[in-house]
Structures are given as C-alpha cells and as structure tokens.
Length: 501
Image (tube, rainbow, N blue to C red; front, top):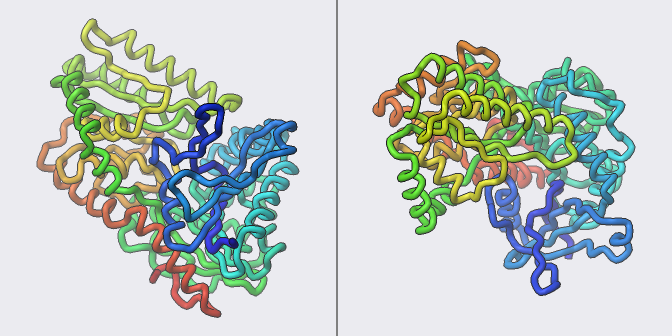
C-alpha cells in the first residue's frame, strides 16, 4: 500500500527489544520530545511510512529486514535504511554534528570541513529520498525533518517532480555570514528551495534562510506578512517585526512559515496524575525538605550554556552565604553519543565545575549541585519540574527549547519561575519568563537573584500567562498548521499565506 504521508527523520520511532531470542519493536518507553508528535500525524491519514536509518554490519546487510511494524501502532510502518558504522559516523557524528552543528548555532570556530564527508552525506540523503519516493502515493505529503536531510528535497524532486514536499528545520538557522561558511551552501539552499513549504520555529530563522537564499541564488520575494500574533515583535534578541512568507524560485512557489513546535500539555498532566508519579513527587518533596530547588535539564553540549550556568551558580553561593543549605541545583545533562569528540570536553567541564562547587560549599547534610548524566525517566523528570521553584534554561543558542514549555505545563497557574535565555527560540513566545543574556555575567547574576526573590503573586501572574501561551500553541496546533497548508496545496495555487494559516 502506498503512503499518503511519508515522514523522513533520522531516528527510529521505537524501542527494539529481544524477548526469548526474538526481536520485538515497541513504542518508546519515554515518549517525550518530537517523536510522539510526528507519529500522531499518521492518525490523519489512511496509511503512512516513517523512514529512518539503522546501523548494521556488512554481514547483516545481506538479509536485512527493511520494513518493520511497531506493536500496537498499525496505521504506519517503518522503512529502515541500513548503514554500516563508518557511514553512520561520517553522516551523523562527524558531518552533521561536528561540521554543521557549530555553524547552525553560530560557533563557526568549531567548524572544520576537512573532517566532513560530503560524499557520504549526499549518499545517505539520496537513499532517504529514494525510499520516500518508493513509498509515497502520487498525492502524498513527503515531510522531511532537520538539517541531517538538507539534500533529500532535491533528490525527491528529481525522482518525483510533482511531489508535495514539506521541510521543517528543528535547529536555529543562522545569519548569512555564519551559514555561508559552509562550502556546500549553494547545494543545500537550492535543495530546500525544491520544497513547497519550508518551516522554522521562529521568524528570525525564516528571515535568515531567506537572506541566505538571496545571497547564493536568484529568488524573488512574493509575499511578506506579519509574524504570528503570539510572538514578540521587538525588544528581545531574536525578535522580528515581520517576515517573508513566499518566495519564487525557478518558477516554483516556496512557502515560508514560522510555527514553533509545542509540547503536549495533556500528556504531561496525565502523567503527573498517575499514582506512580504522585508517589515519586511525594518522595522527592520529602527528600528536598524546606530547600528551594532549581532545575536545569538538557544535553551535554557546548551550545547549551551549562558551564556558564554553573559558574553563575558558584558566584551566587559566593555572594550569598545566607543561601547555603537552603537551595539546591539539580542538573540533568544527558551524555552525548560516544565518539563525538567535541562533546567530551563539554562533559569534562560540567563534571569539573559541579565537583568544584560541591567541594567548596557542601556540608554533611547539603549537596549544592546534584548532577545526572544518564537519562531520567519521563515520570521522574516531570515530577522534578513540578517540584522545582525555578527552571534555569539558559543555552547560548537553541532552536526552540521544549524544557521551558514542559516546566510551565507542570506548574500551570501555581507559581514557579522560568529563567530563559534570550537566544532560544521559545523566548519570542514567552516574554513573561525572566529573559537573560547568558553571555553576560551581570545579566545572569541578576536573573537568578530575581528568580529566587520573586513574590508568589508575581510568580502566579507570570506563570498564568505563560501557561495560556503554551496550552494554546501546543503540539497539536503545530501539526494542524502544517496539515492546513498541505490541504491548501491540493489546489493549483496555495492562496492562503502562512500568516493566515
């Protein structure tokens, strides 16, 4: 059966387990993040396909099972592209993460094209495109996700000229001077211009894309409109007053949109309502006692600002001995995949500064920093969010940051303080947070002091407004927006602009 929705995403949407010597494919145990959201879109179609890669050995390639079905999820199947370890390393760990990642996050000094394998990157993208065209019905939507698959739209367009192609960029899209460091910038941009819709989290990223496109090839701006109504237009680091919503490239209309990924409030609140979650929350509250809890959650990554946050916390304890024993910082920094050289240094820094703070300030009954580098279960993480007086999420750069939105959901309208970097995409949706500049010691110091001293009345007022935004512009809104644009594309001309979708 041909699929009416084909999603290209580099990760597999299931847990692979072995029971009694038999391989089973089951829904992921920790259904947070973007994956359950993408899977939910298959509910809108008769049948769909998810395309991902799977690492195999050369021997396994001969009888590799490309298609699998996830238990209890019957309206789609997973088509897996077999890649050997060297292909995965070159495609993901080196070219994607060590070459492109620093450019996307405005750290060009980490870029080194000599370590990138561009030929392999093209090969993997072509394999994804071939699989998509084989699976897709003639009127299907082929939805490509993130920078790992920048080139897939070009190959899809070559193989299936009438295909409807959407692309969503989950990371930041940098300014012209940063992006154009990439030697293959023209191929990347011309591939994205093969799409019918190119989506970004916020208008700043879409404007950056338009400016890069205008710098490397001939495009015409067809339409410009207002940014979505709930986004800050001026006054913050990533604000934009308006945005381009349509380009024309080689006779094709390319629709540009900014629609930030939302979280799933219903799922989070249902999780917290479970007996197991209530028991864990009560246990955590007893262990915390009368101390205030600050939580910082994310990955080990130099763009996440973990070192800057820990140094700010150390300065806080230096100036405020009255807080000793009365506040704890829980840092959840999940280890990155092995073999990624640049992240080893970031992990060593986090462990060093956490250890230094604890060595300087801890007492027999108080540990200032509680550090987790292994994944925390979804129930535990949501319970920690609910317990925390302050959520401290101050990356140096981040595409969106769902942690901020998840924290708001767990507190609903009951107080709590969100300290948020100006340089994350979510900041333009969440001006009621304490917005701060993670590059400034003074700004960071002031933000954490303000968070710890904020009155309960102000907390509730801010959190109520934040919750209204997060609950309204949730993950369902995000998906529905794309689907409405796709439905409009079924007519000869897409007449509804992205600002009206």
